Length: 251
Length: 276
Image (cartoon, rainbow over all chains, first blue to last red; front, side):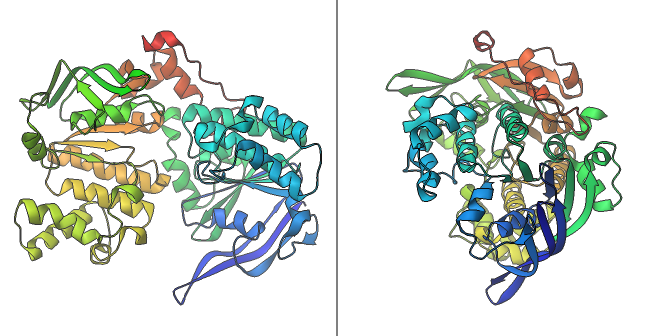
């Protein structure tokens, strides 16, 4: 198993109170698998991705990548294997850095040469013309920005991509393009995905297995086939399925 | 009965590079029903909603052959008359509670401000009305919410607070601009059923603006599909799957489906001719 999460708990201390964002969640993701996390806001699904990256305080449990426990702080070797794409393409790119600078920065940090060619290649990989190199984020549309964010995550050629609601800020047609891009990149590069979304239809389209979460706890793990034929066992997973806007088109 | 009729609505922005038309000749009429307006970002759907309330700031201009709300000609109404209509008889729920509520004012004060100033309602009565409105949108502990600042509420709560605020004066027409796009599916379903009950029980007219075609189809009676400032197709929501226009079909097909075959999603073709 490439990613192993065992009895993970994340607790934030807010104003003297303990807020348990994730409680006792275990999951494993195989290499080249696409694993989905679904649930309402506050269910802890994004927090799991953040915990993997060291962006959330782990209070119990363990995270192992390829058998080895993750180091704290995560360090360069981790960044080379695991990268994250955030939900908001408006907030996750530095507004005063050109696309070129954003894409070149990970290369500089890791001492990787041949910057020019790599940046141009990275833009091409996500379907953007080379002329976008010297633009600023505000000169791009939401979909183009998310492509840049994906290109940035791929600069170090990681094996694992953590995707936190990568398309929920995008229009339906732009979402389709972005999902297609992610699927193509996964196939070409043999990437492993962990993807968070509140949209079951997106998860169904992208993922082989999915974990349904509620109030920080794992509710049910489903195989892709079970999701499609409504084979969920718990009431909550069924509620989510029924509430999915996609349902009306089948009826 | 027609509550609102709009003919040949145009919204023009004069920019340095010449006039840009955000809405180009939109016509529709609305009874006491649920009308959906769908389109991608930039299609002019929000501008159409705002025009009805004449909430377009200069340099934007609104032109229409006709824009009549319950017998009142909105194109000729004075600013004073418009102020009397806005909020009272036609209200708009904005997209994002984070930006549309006053961040430094407690929810209670925001909810009662209008009542206290406009209707000279006393503090206690205003508070009682605010609590009733919050209960109407299924907020369980209205007392706590009244004493909260907007940042202390979740997205779903904030959205419901905005709906409650718009419902206090009991308007005849509610324009809801993406009222649920920031919400989880289960909360979304709750907010929609609240809106639905209001249309049914109070006989309100509702314009529901959204980019989510499936959601609109499930919830509305009729749907206008907008592309580049024009209505390309108008249809009964239940006939959505039989949509004729290639743009509507494209919008439908580019959505992933549960149990779909997971092949690459079709992109959306855009023909300049559709915008003519």
